[in-house]
Every structure is written in structure tokens, then in C-alpha cells.
Image 1: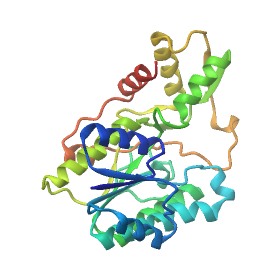
Image 2: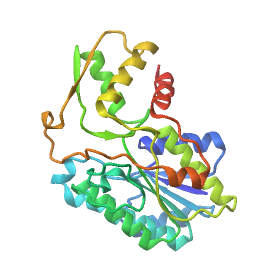
Image 3: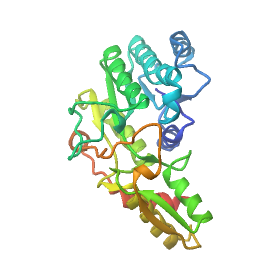
Image 4: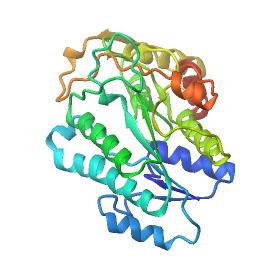
Length: 292
């Protein structure tokens, strides 16, 4: 059985639905089981009639700017909470999948980041996510960490929903054109998680450790917004016209500097799982078709 922690978030909801559709045995929890309380986690495992073979941790503090003024809570969830989950997994002999982020890097690279590249977070959020990675790997050797970026999906606030709302309301929107990365559709990421679980359960020798996953190709946020507009207009999601304008990051001051370059190299996960990753614009089209 799988224990899905953070089952009410964007990725957690996608996973819950796919687990149900696939007939996969799982139990889901959110805030009702406090991940910052090690004893609460262990107590929950004792209430389950079936043994827990996997824990998938989708819980995280993700408010990047807010984290700068809320360091203690951010650390409590992203570091101590993650460590507690890994401890509980180790205690019951479960394998762990833990979600991480491109924010563990400083964004100054000129090529896609591999799993082996040196990490250098530039804000509280990134620092806590990197510390969380270190803690889960030290607490449970049977851990798979998946770093992702620019996540969007049907369930929860994200860039695509925000752009669609603004494009319906305004005559024009300005979007930064000096940050490069790769969007990730939560549905695609959820499918990869299920593939990983299936392959390991079937006896495939898949090494634990860090893996990168996003959709294919790299773009700027401006490119992303333009394509959202073009596809949404074609599908009838948007009716009125809206001009999408490029701008610089300096025009949108923030507490934390966003990575200028956060493209992740997916070679490892593609070769290990034997998967083909959809292009970002193909997945965007499927997503927009779903919400029409």
C-alpha cells in the first residue's frame, strides 16, 4: 500500500485520482497528520490494516517570498517534516518518494542542471528544500528524490490559472522574459511517479537517489504566457484579445531573486525508467483541453 502525504495539493490530488483510476491501494493524508510531529506519523502507520510499502511526500512549504519572513515555519515543514517522514518510512521499512525543486540551484548555469551538479540555493525556500533532501537521504536509504520546476495543474493556484484569469480581465499582461526553465504538468509528473513505483515493485533494479523531471524543452515565462494565450484562444477558453508583453525581472521586485536559468537535465530519469517525456506545449494543450 502507498501512503500519500499532502494528498490535497496540486500534485497530491493528481496522484490520488491516478491511483484510484489504476486500482492502486493507497491512503491519503494532509494536515490531519502533522508531519512536524514524528510520533503522530508513527501513530498513523500503526492504525493501518495493510502494510505501507511506499510513502510519497507531496507536502511542502512553497510560498517562496513569504518564506523569507517565515523562516521557522518553512524549515519546520521542508526540513524537519521531511526528516520525520523519512524516519517513519525507515521505521516501517517503506520506500520513500520525496518531491524537490530547481530552487536548490543558483540559476547561473549555461546548460541544463544534472542531478550531480553542485547545489547553491539563493533563498530560504531553496535552502530548506536542499536541507530536506539531505535529511531524507540520511534517514532512509530507500529514498527517491524527484526535482521538478514550474509546476502547474488543474487543482490549485499556478501560473497557467493566473495567466488565464488575467487575460480574461485585462487588455494586456507583462511577463518576464529573462528567466528560462521548463514547465511541468502535474499529471505528467504523477504518471512518472506511478511508473517508478510499478517498476520497482516489479523487481527492476532502480537506484535510489535524485532524479530530475519536467516537460521537454526550455522557454521563458514570456514564451509560456504567449503559448497559453495562443492555445487558449484557439480552444475557446479565451474570447477577448489580450496583448502579452515581455518585461524584465527588475520590473517585478520580489524578496527572493528567481533563478535566471533553472532548466533540468532529464537524461537520467528517461534512461532509467525507459520513458519519453512530452514536450511542454503538447502537455499544455492537453491540460487546456481538459479544463475547457
